[in-house]
Image 1: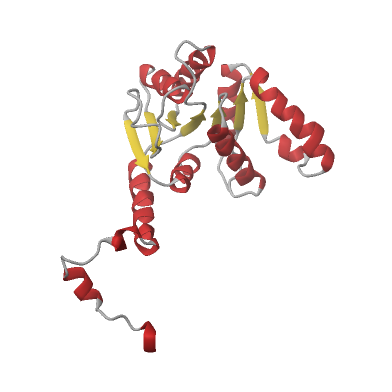
Image 2: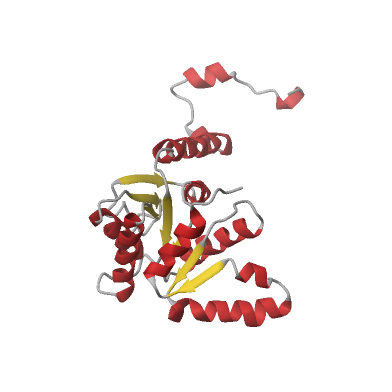
Length: 233
């Protein structure tokens, strides 16, 4: 740095000056350190997790909903098949999958996110990590899982679903099963992808084959078992 770019104070001076501004806490260089800490924390917490499956679904699913019961079945069946269950740690369908996993004696993981309208992890999580940044959290969902099971959900669930499909499509991850559970809910989306997107040539038939649609929890788990435990490239 030269001329006007030379700072008027030294780094040591700014470090030791207790009367200085705290604005540096909110600048991008400091955020890099915070982001790094989130990755370190996530890697440290999940590195020895073992085989796991990420389960997604709406935080708005009510406990008396059939989808909630479906989520419990998924969590239980995955544990019985030898997997830990990873969710976003929130209420609704996520809570249901965590509950099913915990009651089946498995490892129930919640990867929470800082949001203005949701607080804390659900009570059925026994290994939890909270994140400030979506991209750090999303990395953990993929890195420590060998497949996704997707229950009915909204924008957040769709975001996680299509990011996973994109990663498989672009071969960032391989042999990564993605199961949509609930044909009444997801059927219309797949019809649109086939009838509109594929017809326009914006997606290919091979892309659509990356998704498995079923109403059967056992079939969903079999899909993960058959594909998810193969080595990924």
